[in-house]
Amino acid sequence: MSNEAKLLIEGQEHVLPVTVGTEGERAVSIAKLREVSQHITLDDGYGNTGSCLSNITFIDGEKGILRYRGYPIEQLAEQSSFVETAYLLINGELPTRDQLRQFSEGLTENAYLHEDMRYHFESFPVTAHPMAILSSMINASSCFYPGLMGPANVERLPIHATRLISQVRTIAAYSYRKSRGYPIIYPKKNLKYTANFLHMLFSQPYEDYELRPEVVKALDLIFLLHADHEQNCSTATVRMVASSQANMFASAAAGVCALWGPLHGGANQAVIEMLQEIHASGDDGSKFIEAAKDKNSGARLMGFGHRVYKNYDPRARIIKAACDSILDKMHIQDPLLDIAKLLEDKALNDSYFVERKLYPNVDFYSGIIMRAIGIPVEMFTVIFAIGRMPGWISNFKEVVENPKSRIYRPRQVYMGATQRDYVPVENR
Ligand code: ACO
Image (cartoon, rainbow, N blue to C red; front, side, top):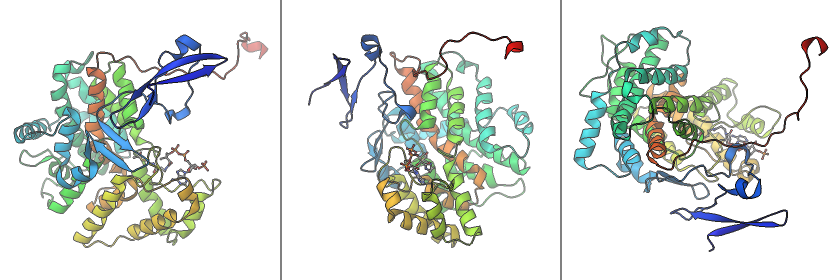
């Protein structure tokens, strides 16, 4: 196959180089197109635009394949842990026993926030959404590390990455405690990553939260499955901010804001709210499916559809099985799970969803697990953000370590008013 493409514009032929990825993905490089032809490409929403070369995550949306650094998500979900997967994403290789121990110890040592950060938490109203607190506090905590300011120091990246992965969990737990008016619970040295998070979330000063292994495992799996997903909205945002040489914490805080929206990470909260509404209305899901197909109804089947997956999201398959397992182990019968299964069954057999290749995505079942664990709905997207942190950091690292990195600066096609003369206010 030729490694060049030809583009004919107004009778003039332009030869464009084709870049081929390691999994055979082919991309026509248009970096010089405007220079040679005075044309740019237009791709609203970037659906067909490759914004970078990346070595981190591979997705084949048609086949439903997801791999971190070449390892299938199914194998990592079965055999790895969130912390090991975070190491893999950031460093490119699975850690040796010693490397994993050192990384885990670094996470434990860096779990504490600067004590002055507590005062920042106090200034938020109790009604503040934890995602607003999370993004603000990640950005604020960068002020406590002067070495972070200015263009990234590549040698300091590992320590900043360790701090951020560890502290996002502490900030997340504090933001929940704040929203409930509960006292802050400090991390414990003897607890591993996910167990420590649950402890900070649910323990009380007078009583430690009882850590059930199946609960720790289920939440660890949710973190792992969210750890990266190539150039989604929030990761592309992190790379965009990183490209201006903003620091790692500022770039991650921007990622949190992008993740918040209901079309992205906020979908896990939207799914549970949708299921609760269906349940409260007495519907088993049948009426809602009809509304979701009607463009005038304003309803969408949240947790369904994906820009890249035109097949079953492999993460949704793993989460669905984990959902059945944890509910069974905890002896919980959740009517929302029955509604979700019915919605899925109906959608997968309905021509509207089949023709548009709309399948359950990662958010469809994750909320039911989090509900069973006792995590409140407004924290769901925060859990997603904790999980996605290694992915954001790996992408940040890829940008700042690339000597050829340039500031991200897309172009546009201007469709506004052409030149006109200013009219003084008395004449308008
Ligand atoms: N329910 C009903 N119809 C849908 C849904 C849905 N969930 N998703 C897409 N469609 C329809 C659209 O109306 C459109 O129909 P049309 O061709 O007749 O106009 C068609 O399917 C294509 O949809 P788009 O919105 O153009 O697809 P896009 O790639 O832009 O959006 C998205 C993908 C945002 C995920 C969309 O499917 C959606 O809104 N899903 C629900 C929200 C959700 O679950 N988001 C989480 C995504 S995964 C993640 O971020 C972790």
